[in-house]
Length: 255
Ligand SMILES: [Zn+2]
Image 1: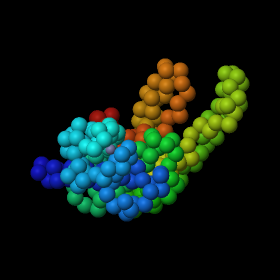
Image 2 (image 1 turned 30 degrees about the vertical axis):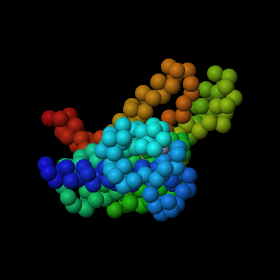
Image 3 (image 1 turned 45 degrees about the horizontal axis):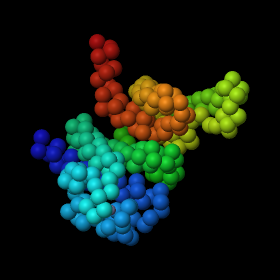
């Protein structure tokens, strides 16, 4: 129990670092200069006492201590999420290399998810890092990774054909003629899921991702705006959920 608390603190500190990366990497701001984070609104340097994961956000009531401009709640959310993910992985695997590898992978996936949510695009080098890291996961099956990546490309081809040639004519919307169905950035993540979980559980994870991604899409339809739903956050959810609970759900099914 006490050890779980330590792991949570470690995870939230990693989350705090991820927050810096989420902010700096897409804007191509150096990671070492400025050394300390600054308020994006007033440029005030953030003191170390204001940079304690989770707690500082609560003490500052989500506002910059200098200009009182609200700080995005995603900072707080990333720290809590990272802490929670680390504890869940620790409870599942114990403190071994599997835990370390999955912690690194999920840190990258949190980073990718939040950049995807913010910009609807992610840097390729982060995808490659995640893919390369996944090769070292225990029981990683290359064949399954390739099958999932290939399946995803085929699905993208079919759905894109539908959108560009059928849906665009039905709805008389010429903009759709240039729209792609799925993001290219999703392919490496889908490959990671297939390789790490295998065919059966991997497919389960993709279904979980697709079902959870329906909700924001429906919300967009209700509000009558065509929003592009970033898919990486949902793939992250699917992989995380099935990695932790997939096998036990199948056990219930069998018995
Ligand atoms: Zn400020």
